[in-house]
Image 1: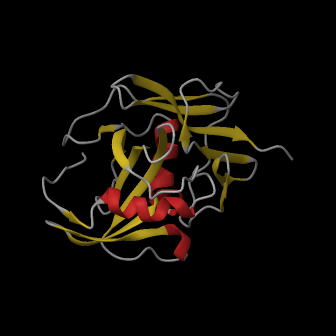
Image 2 (image 1 turned 45 degrees about the vertical axis):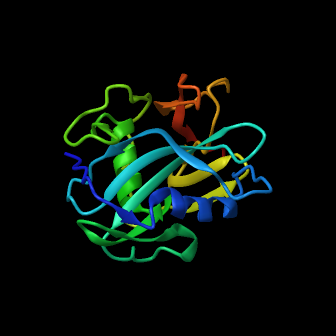
Image 3 (image 1 turned 135 degrees about the vertical axis):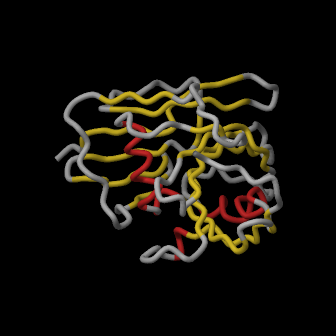
Length: 217
C-alpha cells in the first residue's frame, strides 16, 4: 500500500512543475511563470515497491482564469533506463529517501502498467496524501476484450495541444487528459478512469483523467 512520508522535497514538486509546464504543448501559457496549487489527485502502488506513482492535479492561477492540469508523475531512486530528456521533470532531495528522479509518468512503463491495471480492475486507487488508504472516489470502467499485457519498455508517447497519447498496444491508444474541464463531453471509448479535483473556490469537479480507445486504422 502507498506510504506517504511526512518530510520535505528540495526543490518541491510545485517548483519543479512550474519550471517544466511551459515546455508542454498542452499547457495554455501566460506571460507569467505558472502559479501552481495542488487541487487533487490519487496514487497507485508499484507491486515491487520501487517506483512512486502519483496522479496529481494542479491549478495554475497565473492567467486570466484558473486552469487545472492533470500530471501523472513517477518517482524513482535512479534514472529510468531508456527515458529521453523530455521524460525527466527534474531531480529533488527527499528528506527520507534521498535523491529522487521525477518523471512525466506517461514515459514510465511502471506507471503505465499500473494505470492499465486500474482500467482492468486489477489495481486499487490510493489516497493522495494518506498512507494505506484506498480512494473510492476514483472509478474505472472497461468494456470489450481484455487488455493485452503492458510492455516492459516505455510506450511511444505523443504530446499535442489536446493532451498525451500512448500507443499501448496494436490498435489501442491511451489518451491522458491534461487540461481538466468538468463541462467537456465524455468521449466514447473502451474505458475511462474518472477522478475528482477541486476548483480554487472549493467546488468539487469530476472528469476523465485517462481514456482508452481503439485506434482507427
